Picture 1 (tube, each protein chain N blue to C red):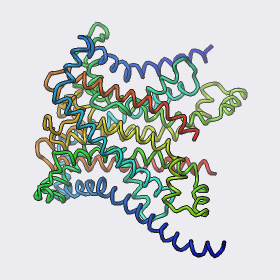
Picture 2: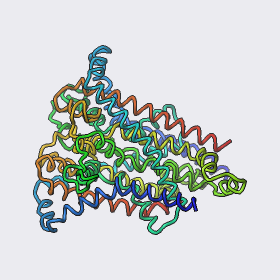
Picture 3: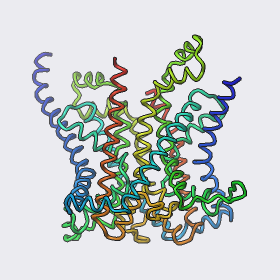
Picture 4: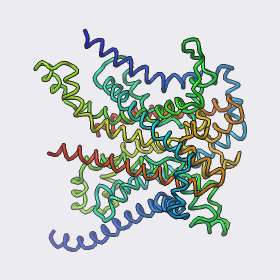
Length: 266
Length: 281
């Protein structure tokens, strides 16, 4: 009897917590967005600046995700399969973006590429980094860097290197071994990592806010646009963009749920 | 066959060594360009004014107030996560109800949802336009410390759940049944059997949540109003210093946050190291 009470009590606490923090707020924004019909939300979304902001977000994501995927796989292979001096340092720097404030990331890039920074000379040669696409891409790469590596490392450890060694003794070179043996074995972990990386890239705000200069229609991503709309008292516009980003987040969740079981049984 | 092996081996070793060098070179160059150099530039900037200059900025009343606020709200959020996250993980593993898979999927929402959107949704439900009432008063937490805690709870929700859940899944229920059949009450079973096993998971989840909370920015921008001495946390302090052109001030406080991040990563690594060694014994 008491056990039943406790069970339902704990379930109640967990449900209340999730509803109060996650679902309640999101549901209300959904409701408010479509309160005045679908057309109003569509009008808010189809302004030139908002479309540009989404385009910019997609461009940044399309550059950052493939680069971080290649790096993540190479880095995981190095951490698990190789011995080299300074491995601990590499490990620490790969994890750092998980624990570091995005604003600190943005500031670091701001100082490095700023006029007085070590790479400030690039500006003198007409190579614009800060307040334009390159800095925004680098900032996004920084914050989304660990996800593929962190997903692939445990899988690589688990599968061991017996099959890889067998392939080598049978005459395969390291490139062949990677494509035929290693990559198929870690593919679900890679895909899972790519999904997490994509979500992080689409949603990045703090680091990009610092290095972009937030020029409307030029260096404004979707998340920056949400803030700009809200500050300009266009709450409906802010909500409409938020809902699109939230729908993408739901897609990400669906993908995560579909892939996770496969990854665990692989 | 032995002659074939003898001729193939040196060539293969050479290409092996070349590919190792290539991939290591790629990894370290990328890490240096993207992560290490910017961090070095930040640390360098903070030392520009010397130790005294650094200390002057960090110990200024506004910076201290922001850091104190950041630390105590993050500690509160990390502890709340420790309790509520463990309960949620327990419910997801040991309880059975309809729609459990859905609830399980929703846990990851804060990983997938942009932080600025998180702040906006919290403001919609708990801000000035809130439809909620408590004891006849409209709820409005905008521009208060409560709003900071709420936003930090949102973005850190998955950490403890996702570190405790796999441990609970692997934990043998027979141990708990044995304890119960030997006369242990449910509370005793939890305290003596379940808790010691999930503690490392809780601790590393709490440390991750704390790290995330200390650095959180996006979800706090809209909802806290950025009021110095009242609701301005360190990340927002840094941002406003950048905007006003005070690079030294921004860099000094940023280095403090950087140090906290490194310390937390080290302690998470230590917890992980301790638990895996424990497994092998």
